[in-house]
Amino acid sequence: MRKLAPPDARIQVIEKGGKDIHHPGLEVFRLRNVGRDLGGFLWYVCEFYEALAGDYIFTSANLNKWFRKERFIRLLRTHCSFSCSQPDPKHGLRALFETVNFSRSSSFNRSDWTIHDGYTGAMMAAYDDIGLYSPEFQNDYYLGHRLHLAPARPFMAWYSKYLGNFTDFFQRQPICLNGIFRTTAQAIRRRPKNLFCSLREQTQVSNYLEVLFFLERSAASVCGGDASACAYPKMTDFTRK
Image (cartoon, rainbow, N blue to C red; front, side, top):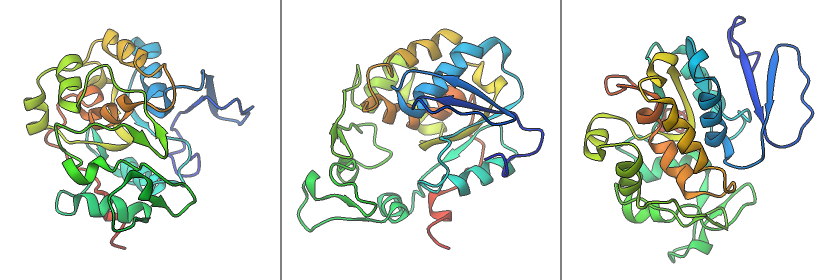
């Protein structure tokens, strides 16, 4: 990541796995291993809300999965105040599964889903029924694990309870995926600090949380301010090469 980022970029690492990281130019924060990436992002904003300045890219440090390296490079090049990873609306589910090289049998059971890197089971089969963009999206399983369910569901009910008018969000802002996005301090502070802190509390249960899927879809609303006019890198930009 240091090689890809501009020389003057400040790289801060939220470490949850107990690794002893020592590298010149890295600032490391160590947290309990719950909440995955988005829980860490919410912690960072809650912790440093008043001191935030300039532009930010939030991403997993593992750029070798889910085409994060390509997305990271595109986010570095964008001039938008907010940008995130989206599926192509023309290809939807097919583009998502082509990206990660899925297969499944002809029957439609959660146990039929297979990812070719060796993981099996339960890869969001609900997508095929209700779609990536659906207000009725909810998810009970992920990669063979039963998820801790969100405090309100489906997605629309959760959003309405914690973030505001779902119809306005759904019509004006993008649905983001993969938990990688670019934003600004100004955009983040359009939401009050206590929102980020309270959302983080929802991530402090485990690493297998339904609410993380709701949070990644809501990234433009939570961290993007008025992101409706921006152009976004599409997932299928990386599957068509």
